[in-house]
Amino acid sequence: MKRIILVAGARPNFMKVAPLRRELARFPGEFEPILVHTGQHYDYRMSEVFFRDLELPPPDLFLGAGSGPPSEQTGRIMAGFEGALERFDPDLVVVTGDVNSTLAAALATAQFRCRRRSGRPRLAHLESGLRSYDRLMPEEMNRVLTDHLADLLFTTTPADGRNLRREGIPAGRVRLVGNILSDTLLSLRSRAAGPPAGLAGLKLRRRAYGLVTLHRPANVDDPKILAGLLETLAALSSDLPLLFPCHPRTRSVIGRAGLERIFRERPGFILTEPLGYLDFLGLLLNSRLVLTDSGGLQAESAILKVPCLTLRDRTEWLVTLRAGGNRLAGTEPEGIRRSFRQCLAGRRRPIRRPALWDGRVAGRVVRALRADLEVNS
Image 1 (cartoon, rainbow, N blue to C red):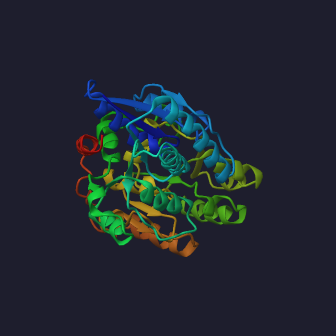
Image 2: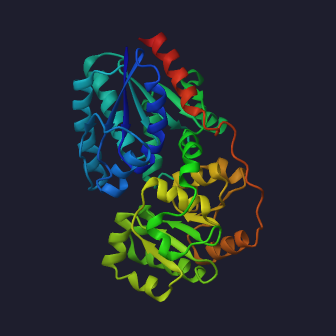
Image 3: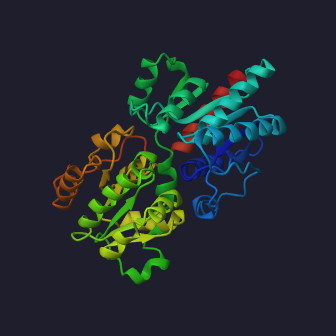
């Protein structure tokens, strides 16, 4: 039986790990999936609630890394994950996405193999090859380094594979499988048909509000930059109510900088606590549009065909721009206002879900893992 560690630590990981774990569990005599939760998201609303909503069992190991400066957090996760490798002695480690836990587990796995002078465990990276070419973006560094450590690289589009080949990664290590987020979103869509009960008092009507998320350090760590974005969004809420489920670190900056006044002055700009995954998915499905700086939400909105305005100047999810649902609005007020008004006026191309984002990705991943382990066991 092949022992496979699945690494999760932050919200974007859970939606990718859940369908993969379920698919591996379909072969109990062949695979033993082991879920390691690094604890990168230390707030209950940002991690444990996703286990409930995604019907994931409790993790086999919780590292409790917590928050802190990225280098310290990455170091704690590396140290804890090395212990997990010693304890479970896996045949394969699967990391997903581009958060700090992704890179930390990849580095720990590579160093563990060097110390043992062994090619085991193999390392697979799910969501490889995405590139924004913005080296000031922490996620870009995590993506690039993890890709160059991995033995098996799963991509969401053919363009991602071309990115990897340009960087010298052999085509034989790359597998085009599609976006595993589609497995989660399309399977849960019917369970998240309406707005969450906790927000019933807001009387949100279908397609009559926008959904906002902001969490990137470049947008939220500097109070002046965050204030500028919030003021711009607040003004737009006069045309369309905007609901803002707020990430804890963003909420902390809002509180320290006294920016709650923006929401008091604009009742159409509604600040809420973070939401569980099903609650958030219900809001996303029923929204008119999304304004976000999140990479994952760009992909989710493309899968669900919800218009998205990305509050960044670059994106790694170029396929969502080509698919017609996403546009780069930037972070300057005029660009955001222009994109917002064009979207409300319906001036956009029809949204197409990208090829292989079809809800059957986990099966393709497991077939590729089986073939790889047969050759390299």
